[in-house]
Structures are given as structure tokens and as C-alpha cells.
Image (tube, rainbow, N blue to C red; front, top):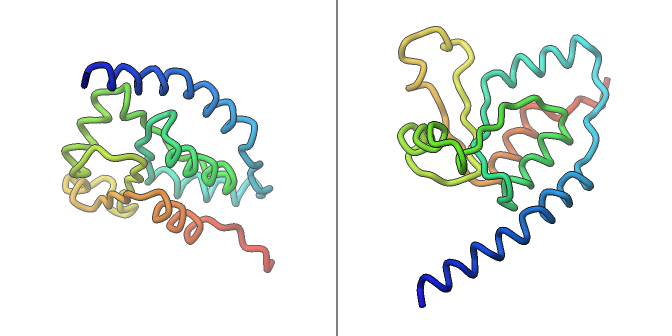
Length: 141
């Protein structure tokens, strides 16, 4: 019976995944307009970030939409189909749960103990809050 239940849910995921990805593609917001210098600064700040995600996870889709709305170039790492990313998420982040945003300490990238200065942020709302705090365009200028 347990095998049938697992097969049923795998079939449901197999059927729903293309529709979820299509809906994401159709409803993804446009990025804000920035000057070349501003975009270069944002891109440099994004070098310290990596998003561990599954392609059809609804919470990951929510985070990816916010990343697109803010116009961020954050590296996306698929922890579902890439064993190396999944192992890194398990060993360094502490658990295999997505979405997870890895935040590296910018000033310590070249130091051998840089791994100790990483923050692993779980929960889609926490990730979105962090990204909004760091990257929301200033409209007062």
C-alpha cells in the first residue's frame, strides 16, 4: 500500500510540475530599471549569495519570483538533481530543506575560514525579507 501511495504522489508531481513552471514563467515580474553602475553594484553584492532550491517547489518559486522582481543575479543551485549541491546543503547548512539562501561574508571570501562565516537562511518569507531589506531600489532619489 505504501508503494502505491508513493507512486501516486510521484505521478501527481510529474503531472503538475510542467504547469507550475509554466505558471511561474508567465507570472514572473519584470526587474526594476537601474543604471549600469547600480546594476554592477547589485551584481557584486549578489556574488555572495546562492539559492539552494528544487525546480517545482512552490516556496522556491515564490523566492525566485521575488529575485526576478528585484532584478538580482543570484546563483541558483538545484539540490534536487545535483548530489554535490544536496550534500553541501546537508553538511554546511545542516539539513536538506529548500529554499535555502547561503550568505557568505563578503570581506572574508579569500580567507581559509570563510565557510565559518556563512549564514544559511531557510524559510521563503525570511529569505524574501532579507532580499527586500538588502536590495529594494531606493525610490526617494
